[in-house]
Length: 352
Image (tube, helix red, strand yellow):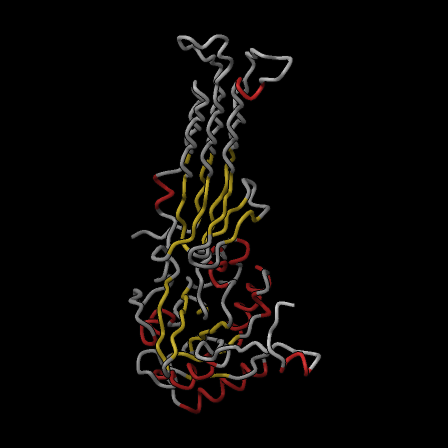
């Protein structure tokens, strides 16, 4: 399945059905009067976040969504049928943006979340509703409320607990394959990863989702390389793992480049907790690793982990540190109710 994280679509709700102009005509019923029913309501445009989706590729081939209009009113005071709602299913993490991408109109962060985005028009009144003591045979009616329409952008931000970032060839694909169930492509060249990858990590009876994004290079905020387009997928992460290739020319400079790109992107990424990791320790000795770790700490890192995605060295300690940033899903919160009057707390309940 191809990955697509942006799509532009057209939405149009259903118009309300027109009211009917009708008069009761039956044998032996003189002056039956008006009996035109009201029109039916038009269909709403509804967005729903569903599980099992992680791409917007479906919206590349289907870009126009139009709800049906309500049915017209009928004689004998029959109201027209309301049109069904048009439900658009999107992945969890999808945002609905205005056409100029300046405003977030809806944000779906939970499975089952539903938003009525465009409301269908109300049905028009039939002539029976205009009957009065002074207007016994009205012929006026309403055509129904028009529909609403607009173009919007859909933008997907993958929901993950941990974000994985670094320069190209930092070993991110090898790392995510080693710690999770992901099967990312691994190659001896830059930009092996072209689209974000998700993996589920199981560690010490805990599970969390890790996201791997394509490598960043200097100037990514201005569009260099793949650019910073995929940084949006780690905006919701609780902690970032910053992988640095120990075989690189200058690990401290590599860390600075990535941090500068996060700051240039904004959205609070530079303020998120970062675990700085020296990767590919199987290609160097401990003495070199310690020297590079000291340089990284001098450059601003709080602590440096030394790991090898190929051999598994140091991964256990790193994952232990990651758990410290995640909520304990096994604990349950208990709510206590404070009672000011002790006698009231001990007394039996009475409706009086």
